[in-house]
Image 1 (cartoon, rainbow, N blue to C red):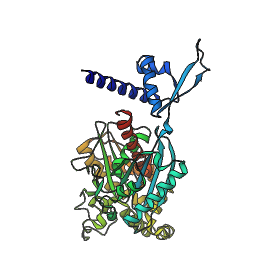
Image 2: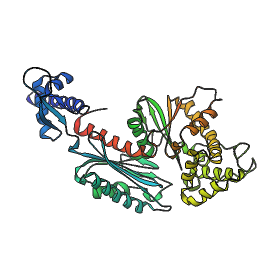
Image 3: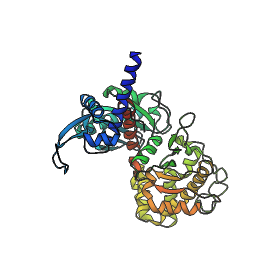
Image 4: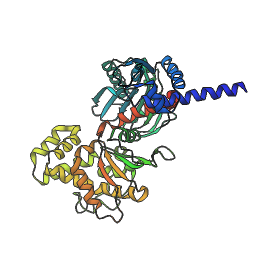
Length: 421
């Protein structure tokens, strides 16, 4: 009987401490009395929990509140020590590496971005990620031992429980456990691995103008295309954690470049299946196709200056086209209109099956902003079903690292703070 009472007492203390931490993390500091009132506990219960949290280094008592207008003894102030630990968010893709470090309140202390050259192998990219992570921590003044949790996003099909990449056509050298294994060599904290679009969806909901919709689809659109799905407020992963792999939709079996497609006509030879690991939808709307369409439009318009910029950009031709869209270059806008028509077909499929409240376009294509939204909306206007709201990501290419930070904080809240979001 005594064991049951002790267990119950311990559980009650944990519940009280969780409630206190939840409240303190939303304030710069609070008085003990105000905290007790806010969480609905006695001052004595709050004080006991605070003393325990002080011993854990999560809370500290500050100076007396001498600015208070109330009569009597000045109130004792207390605050959450966000600097007690840090979390690390990492993203790896064929184009770049991104790293961010944040404190326990989610305040970002430092970030870094490194562009990758064409043909950088998996092992080489991982080593570059480790160097970037070390440099980012150093710039924030954070030791590796002060990192409590790290999360990393990568393209492909990922098994988060096993910490392995099962399939990654764009960076085959990352298949297996190389990412987690090498990160464990330099970090002593738990490390979580997930698909980049899944993490980007979490990041967008957290940082993207506080999007809390309980029904949304976040589409990462760039060289490749994938989607994160939120249903009833929860990220939907599917049976094998690859729900939302819309790049492999095949919607254009009869669309080989007819009128309006700027292709070579209905008798064109079909594109090879999955070149470079690209799915059928990615072949029709992804970065390679956008560059091809832009070059064709530039030649048709006799825009030699734009064509020269694309050629000079080399492997960064996609970026050159996106910059031209922002500048209002007609040939670039024409290419975007073609892929917007194709992309609208994908949105209509998503709408028919999931009926989300919102579709957010993220990744490199988010840089196109209003011209892209106007084009997609225009091509959706003839659909028989009401279409979801359509927006571009507020975070663009940074959504993955912010999602990685959010996941790391969620895990700390769950395992260390007893907070359940």
